[in-house]
Structures are given as structure tokens and as C-alpha cells.
Image 1 (cartoon, rainbow, N blue to C red):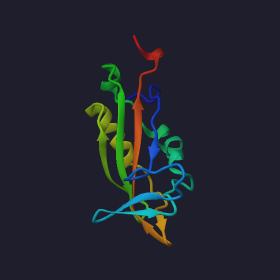
Image 2: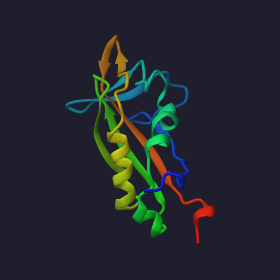
Image 3: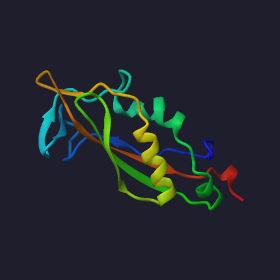
Image 4: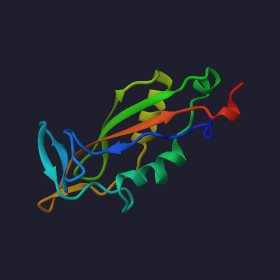
Length: 143
């Protein structure tokens, strides 16, 4: 696997419905599936979800060797739930790029340490999240 050849140009958003920039709440998902609003977003090591990329993903995502050698690139969107205990669950590919890239994106999300869960009315709530991870080979590594 190659770590040095990854460029991120994706995004993170927290919702199961569309959230406008003017909203103070985000959508959450409960089991069985039911939509509500959450007042406090899940936090990764005390930081917002965007920091998850820099604090964890950038340090742990590895470009699969076979994908690198075959010059396979693309964007993988992974959905996952931060449950009421802060555990990452229900990790799945929402948008596939290639099976090799998909597996690595899922692996790194699944390996995440616990988060602080989303809160609503003082109660922890499961929150559906999505993260786009863009696998690109830097020009300096191309033939």
C-alpha cells in the first residue's frame, strides 16, 4: 500500500436529508429508521467531523498497492452511523469508485476510534454521516 499518493478533495456532511447552511440542526437516523433533528453533532476527539479527515483519515488511509500500480483512481463515498455510544457502525459504500478503493475506504472508517455521539434534548442519538474520499495519484508518481 502507498500512503504518499493520496489527495483528498472530498467532503463530509452529516444528514439523511438536505441541510441548509442556515440550519442549526442536522438530521439523524434512529433504528428503526426515523428522522429527527440533532442539536449537537458528533465530535471526533472534541473536534467537528471535518477534523476527522485530518486527525484520522489522512494518517491511516493507505493507497492499495494493486490500485496504485494499475493507476486506478476515483472518489468513494462511504456512509456510516455514529451510534449513541459513539461507535462507528453500519459502514457501507454509498458511491463506488473501484472495489480496491472501496475496501480501503471502508476499512479506514471502520477502524475509527470512538466519537462523542450526537445529542438531542440531552440524550445521545445515532447520526448518519457520509464522507467522500478522493483517491488520486500525484503526477510525480505517474509514469
